[in-house]
Image (tube, rainbow, N blue to C red):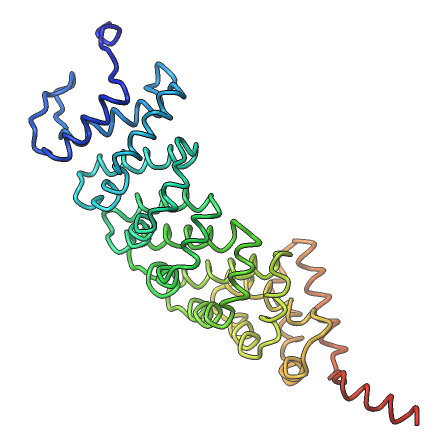
Length: 346
């Protein structure tokens, strides 16, 4: 019954109280009914969170939510919280992530445009992967941000992006490394026209770094990267990127090596990329030459490859590859063909 007589704090009051809490984080707090004592910052953040999400008994009020967002924006409170996330108590960090994600998802009070004007905030979230205690909080906020194309673009065109390739997905902490890979995957797949343009503009650098992921000593990194590569190349929006990728000798050699990996899962994912090299009707001769040199071995390998699988599509694809390899021959280059045609006509 006590709750009925407690007046919920207004957005204006909460805005003022969170500022005071951050300025005086050691202010004493009375224990709650269970006897638990939380610090003042955590308490105020929890109150803001409940205003935005509802408290289980009462749904949130859209007008108050929008007002809360505008006040947090006006006070520059979110950058302050995000940039100091590491200094906040454990529960407070969780509340910050939930508040940020709510504002971002609903774009309350122009929150997305506001974050876009604060590039240091997104950069801080990316670099949060360097601190295991806040990495997972930062990961949820990043993925919520990436749902918005303008913010995804900001990361794709930032030097911070390359840290995913070079550092974050390799992190020894399994949970953090996996979370970083989930964010990495979102960045490279969510906004297809944007990502396709990014791949074309940074093709050499992207795939030089990507091939290092495929050579990682970490099994999980190798498998996840290979599976993601298959998704990227087989996406129609990346057709031009795929054609560039499958015309390079080093990429074919990489897939042939991965077909021989000790892990059957990696072999299977490698097969789905390798098949694109073989099926390409316009293979450059340098690709055809590698396939011809290894033709007998490849056919023998494919005839025994994962025969226990009953997947009809997989069986058909394997048969098609074997037939294609069996009839493979070097094709005349267009200029040679044109020259011969001209000679004949004389």
